[in-house]
Amino acid sequence: MRVGAIVLAGGQSKRMGRPKATLDWHGSTLVRRAAGIVARVADGPVVVVRAARQELPALPAAVEVTQDARDARGPLQGIAAGLAAVGDRAGAVFVCGIDAPLLHPALIGAVVAALAADEQIDVVLPVAHGFPHPLFAAYRTSIARDLHDLLEQDLLGTKPLLQRCRVRRLDATALLADAAVAEHDPALDSLLNLNEPEEYEAARARPAPRVTVIGRGDVRAATLSAAGEGAATVNGRATSDPEEPLVGGDVVAFVMRPRYRPAP
Picture 1 (cartoon, helix red, strand yellow):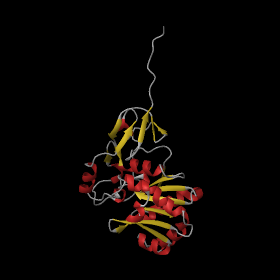
Picture 2 (cartoon, rainbow, N blue to C red):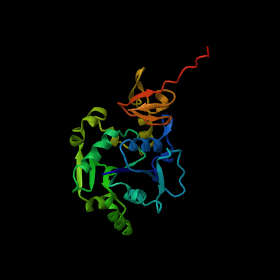
Picture 3 (cartoon, rainbow, N blue to C red):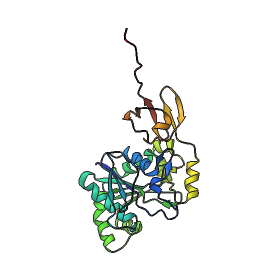
């Protein structure tokens, strides 16, 4: 089963007071970080959904951008737009917002793996910190029909959608049963989203992720440019994008530039 990703960027950001998509995150932006994190797990399309006329900062060429058919209709409208863009190129998608910069690929992988393991379920829904998290969930693309029906009835919340679907809920114990989640995200900070300016500032004040740079040891860096200069591999995957997001546990190897040697 191919897995895509949908990143919802079209929210109105009323409580934040300014567009979340363009907020700085250690020299990058929240939308750039979200797209880069989900791309690590997705082997299908990565789609960012924006509001009509919404301007977004630069994104990698492989990231697709689409827009809500109608403004101010909540996350279901955004998910529907994302699913329409994905089409038949994936059998499932991981859905998230742009306001979760602590999201770790290990948690995404655990949620997606739970969906892939059971063909009888439509949604895998994390439940932690006292809440369900439908915007950190994995959905089969076949829910598009239900989404269309709900939007036609102006039922815009995620609860009506989940009531129509076969849902597996993963509580904190189930999420932390995954070894990678337990190692890299033991507090399940992946599921913290930033709605208020104070939440954003507190998250920005946290130490950057601890990553290992070959030849230098452990450093704190949220982006490739913060870890070093030039092209590199991140966990064996080549990149030269200075805004490439880094997460705890990453191993970065910068490409050694050949030194100039004068002709004899």
